[in-house]
Each structure stands twice: as structure tokens, then as C-alpha cells.
Length: 134
Image: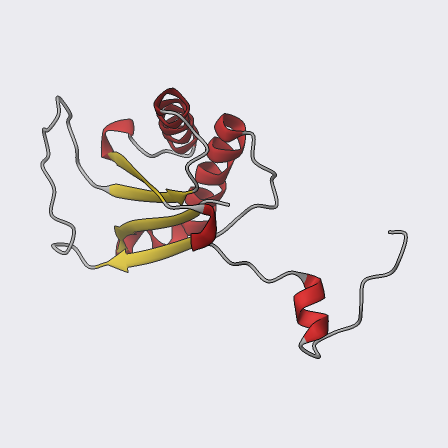
């Protein structure tokens, strides 16, 4: 269950849906995750708040789309690099220049995640129990 944080300049705010979908397609395609495993946070910044090199490493960067992926330690380095390539390809398909993308992966352990289930909600008095046999 990756948690993805995307930092972009405010002038890309109206492109959040397209950026979100592209990043998610790249993750699903490269990590074979379920399509409903979607958890993203967008952070918008005024120009000047994202400070970055326009040329490192061997780039011609005109903007920055910073994608931070927090995930469980299930993937080796090759899989994470493939994920990066897939996300960049998907973002390029919606008009983001590959040089403008920077992806950082961070891992945490299984015990560091908690996502309540429907049964947890029912036990706490929210909603009805799921139907048996479905």
C-alpha cells in the first residue's frame, strides 16, 4: 500500500487529476498493485518554494514534479527503478517533461501501517456488517 506524496508548483493545480492518474498507472503497472490501492497527497507550492538544480544530473529541468513513494520493503532495487521508469513514462504521456520528474522511495515495515477494515468500522459502531457470501 504505497503512500504517494506529490509536490508541485501551484500553477499545476488544475492538472492534479491527470498527474494522479498517471502516477497511479505507473505504480500499478510496475509493482503489480491492485488498482484500488490508491493513496496520494498533493502539496502545492508557490514559485520559489521548490528549490532544485536545473541541470543535475545531466538534465534540462524547467520545473519540478517531486514524487515521494512510501512503501513496504517488498521490492528490490530493480523493481523500484522499473517503477520510476513507468511513472516517468506515464507522466510524459500527460505532458510532463521527463527531466522535470524526481522520484524518491522510502521504505517502512509492516508494523508501520494501519488501515482499518470494514469490520473495524462495524465494531466501532459505524455502518452495517458486510453481507455474508459476497
